[in-house]
Structures are given as C-alpha cells and as structure tokens.
Image (cartoon, rainbow, N blue to C red; front, side, top):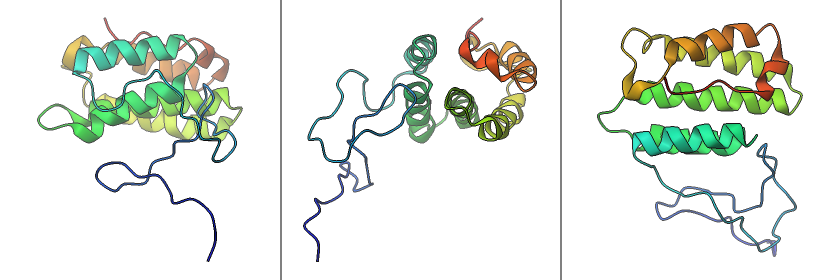
Length: 154
C-alpha cells in the first residue's frame, strides 16, 4: 500500500486532475495543493462558449479553449456535438503545434477539418466554419500559423 493521495474526482466520480497547468496544458508538479483559479467549469451556453474559447485562443491558451469546447461537447443534448468536437480538435491541434509536436498538430488539425466539414453548408451559432477550415488547410503546410488561430465567428 502507498501513502499517495487519492486521485481527485468530480461529482460523478470521473477522474480529474487538479494539478496546475501552463497555458499549453502541461501539468505542473504533482500535489502542490493549489488549483488555478479563473476559468469556469461546466458547459457554457453556446455563444458564451464560443466567445470564451476565442478569447482563450487569442491569449495563447489553446488547452484551456479545448477544455471549454470539450465541456460543451460532453454536455450537448440537441445541439451539434460534432461542432464542439471539431472546435476542441482545433484547439488541441494548436496546442500540439505550440508544444512543438508537428505530427500531433497535423493529425488533430486534419481531424478537425474533417469533423467541421459537416457544418460548412449551414453553420450553427454563426461559426465561420468555412474560414476555420481554410485556416486549417493553410496551417497544415505552415504550422507557424498556429501562433495566430482563426476567428471562430463570422
């Protein structure tokens, strides 16, 4: 038996990680006893989630943007879950590029482009799906573009 603390869990019993993370989602030292403040937990309404995700991308916090989109994706009932999955993939792709992982960035950005394709003809919530997909296509050949992620809304 070990004296390690129990893994933190949310109200539903799912494992969580309360370790501090940097703007690219890399965890800090284990069991520092502090949890970063600031970002809301739980799914936001769609417009607020899009605005918050965009702000986080502009602040060079793509991992935090991914968390916002993932919460919406997991909490989705009736709205387009693929849209949130595609936006989460976009943020993860940017995270990989910013962490100097080109293979991961290309793989996840390609998945994001494919996932978002469904929504291009009739984009929900005024999301600029065509613009995002164009940005991804250009970024796949020049990952330095990840320093300036695309606007999400038209």
